[in-house]
Image (cartoon, rainbow, N blue to C red; front, side, top):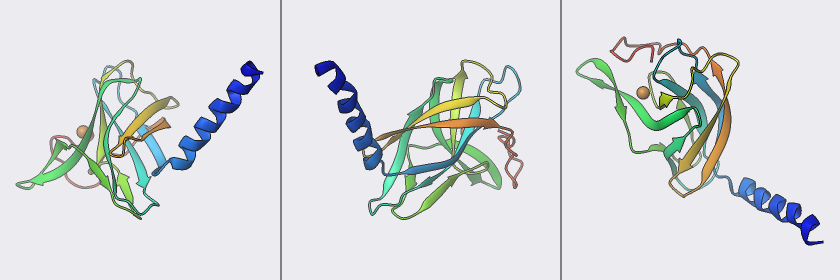
Length: 153
Ligand SMILES: [Cu+2]
């Protein structure tokens, strides 16, 4: 009895977690990079359907030794990449992580992500919640505008 009850307990815990999930993640993808590249980037759309402002505060991936939140900013006419503490996702809004803007930066890659791979990404929110998504590896177009030193990255 005790043994058969266990999966039910686990199932209800997972259900509770899923119901409590406060951000939805769509279009998650990891950029395909040439062999030997030390870094890659991940992009996605984060939607906050709730009434509480949220923010991404960190993340991790089995692919990467470390993961940082980044943004691109214009500095004296040149697009530069900056590490940021948070990526805000205000209540009722969708925030797009895309080339030339917000993105996740993956460092110390365990292997080269190639098209067809699926990469696990775990996102940490400021409310303590974590979201895990599977992101396919795609060839992502470089940012449409600007040709700063981080273009194509
Ligand atoms: Cu970056």
